[in-house]
Image (cartoon, rainbow, N blue to C red):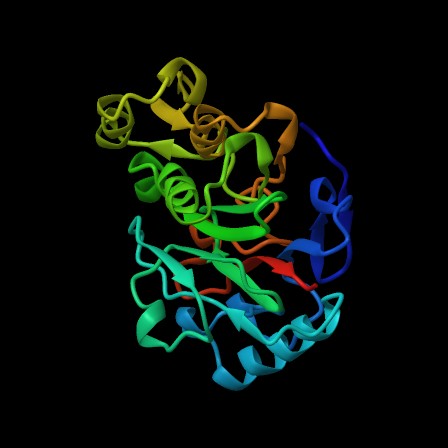
Amino acid sequence: MKEPLISHKQMLEYGILKPYSNIFGFSTTRHGGCGEGAYATFNCTHYCGDSPEHVKTNLESLAALLPERPRVIVVPRQTHTTNVRVITDVPTSEELQDVDAVVTQLKDFCLCVSTADCVPVLLYDKEKQVIAAIHAGWRGSVNYIVRKTLEQMNRLYNTQGEDIFAAIGPCIGFDAFEVGDEVYDAFKQNDFPMEYISGWKPETHKWHIDLQMANSVQLIDFGVPTEQIDICDICTFTHYEKFFSARRLGIKSGRILSGIFMNF
């Protein structure tokens, strides 16, 4: 389902969550911050080599943009795992190590993931009042991190697919995401519907993978209605002037911060 993205200088707001006044979902742009060089200008992530002072200033700006100031902005240190951390109190830095998805039922906690071509996925269970933020690179996607997060939500809160609203944010698009045979084979061996998520391009002599679709099928398989899935059509590789792209700028560059916030 295509819902309007509400675009501000410093962030996109996901329209699919707008009907719920207690929920705010967003992805940051590169604009309106104080960073320099490959971190210019609105990098809000500590884990990519940016100046700590610049990140601190940008996070303060981000907090001021949210509908209410959150008690804490939770940003895990991601390592392309499928580890899911349930947040029941303000987490320590150790509790956020090697974590690629965060889930909570707590109010005033802004759950975030950082990306720069990988896929950010934001979830809201409207019945159980649970939110989640997921970092899905190709390794997380092929190992079903979205499904594993939903299963964790189901075990802990009895989350049902029909109650989930999902926003899939800016990432590298199908046309730009060339992969080797080993990546294609990994998705095929893990029983992904390759006819829907991949294609061979003669002009590049490469397989291409649609990471957004690879994560969307996990939502659908869990029972999330397609009309409750919002897929952003912005390719970070193509639009690297507005959104950070590691393939364009290198690993030592800024990150998009995508978050979801339940404020009352």
